Length: 398
Image 1 (cartoon, rainbow, N blue to C red):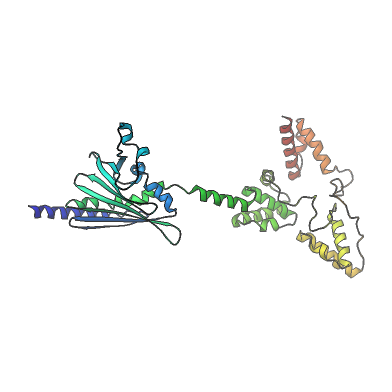
Image 2: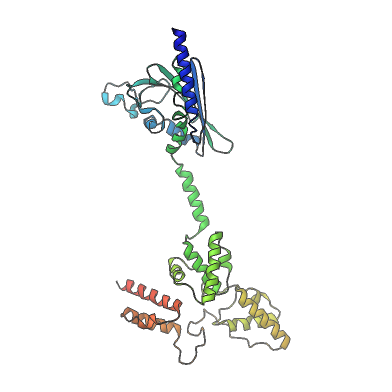
């Protein structure tokens, strides 16, 4: 009779094992199960990019086992206290070897007793657990730090006796996911993340949107300075900036969306009030070229080589070659002491209104509600500047 019962149990175990292993479960853990008469063992291995103390914190939170441990409905501590409210309180529970716990399985079965068998902080936790009245398991979690800096966790479940096959029952379907489930509840190391974010923020400088970066690069590129576009580290953004620059040069003006984007962040170009490369600040490029050509003919090539804009530097060198060939120096302009005057920045045709005066007049008209002349402007860049100034003026008035 006993032999027949043992044969039935063995055949049933083999059947369940084959069925479970044939389910082809796709999880990120490595797992194996072993069974021989009166002894069963399952092993699950998983690697986490987390510190051992963060994993240990999750493993020792017994109240959360119902969230990730297959088959556990609830775990309560057993505390020796005269007050009933303290008997099952984790606040009063001493987490140490020999401490007893109560386990409620996810079935119709009642509560079963378990206990903590071994504790090695941040290294190993061993529990005695029972999910049925006829089988008892020893569950251990071992944490190992790998050379790569990640943490390897090994979960082993052992049982002995006639009904030890219950340990492998449904293992491939449910039990093998134990460490896969655990990974969802390991807390993030906020200190490391915060430190990385701070370092990244220091290195990154002011944070601008992609459209603003493109707009600033296109604006500098139209003026002949490609340094901003070439310095964009993100390859797709750099490509978009170059494409926008080609389009802007073909059309002859910047698109409206890029003009609006320029208002979203600080201008990356060099201010007009600051000399570039030690050069004086002239009101126009002709005076600058004449100045550097005279310096070059006198033997000082530093001024002409310090012009940052490549097209302008090329014009200056061409003028220098022409002056050497003809023997005629261009007249030396007066070197300004301060920043260039806006009113004298360009020579306007007779009867044409200066840009600054035009902007001031149209902004005043726009504030009063007259937008006809503004909308009739062909220069879209200027029209955008005027409308932005009107918005700022109305906002300031409120």
